[in-house]
Image 1 (cartoon, rainbow, N blue to C red):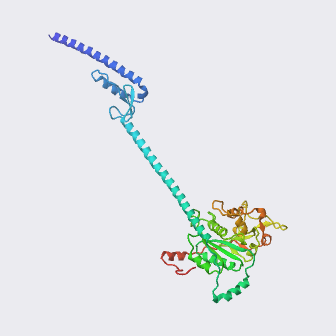
Image 2 (cartoon, rainbow, N blue to C red):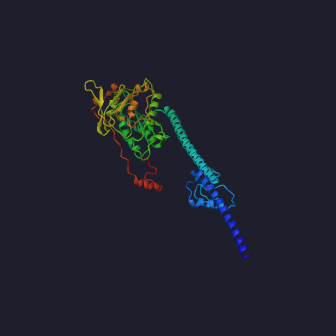
Length: 434
């Protein structure tokens, strides 16, 4: 019995060994299948670590000999949903995880948001440019409207009171009576500043000594100021008062140097338009541009009166020289060159105070005007090249050897204490015109 039971035990033991052998064969076959599948998909699973492959193999052997597809994560994260990759092997095919689509959609959303911001920025820049163009156009229309009003501005004649009539006549006789010579039309642009009245006063004292003189004063202002209006009314001169504001895009900033933008363009052009609208071929005159910061000798205007078409003369203290002048041929009196060293390549290297133009030439050249969009220092050349040539220039002031005008500049006054008073709501000139 014992033997039989023992023999029976051996038989069972042998059967168990047989079953174990069969199981080992099955495991071996399954392992080979998995390895074959791994080799077939080695392009996507080459980076996997050995212990992950072993994990899938041992898992497969414990599933009651059923063959399940082998899944490998392309990133490092194990099985199931814990993997960190976006792709996986499933039956030998690649497929994308849902997270990949979510990332792609967020990227597209971000790009769309950036595009919308860029579009809004572009629209804002376009609207800003359109507003600037509209503003400049409106200012040009306003300037043209003011210019039309200026054309009808009357000529004011000095009328001394009866109490001073005798003194005025006596002074007038000493200075010289009007004659049959040309009227000198002096064009003076001016603008509001602390020294404005002082500058105009200095000029008016010289102009009072000139017979046949007509002063055209043009304010750089939207309207005529009381200071200039009252000053001219008391000047004793024959004058025309005009206002012509410079467009804001051409105005100098508070700390800009004088040469950064052209000055006096709008004002000189307004005066030329007034002349062409109120004078004709029957008038005898010469146009002279008299800036309010220069210094003039009364002898200069005797030379100005000699101009037949376009005359030139020296100017002192300008262009880095003691005198900047045309060079004249002593025999013929014709201008042969200029001694200018500042931008000598200018068509006419000369200062604004260094030439005069006969009235008939201005009336003939109806479109001759100054311009904004030119190089600094070329304003004189801009007007002269429209009315004459170098060969036609007339050298005056004793063959351009006498200086009767100086390019002076009044020093800006130091008003620090006045500024402090203004901040406190006070001023030293309260109710007083300075």
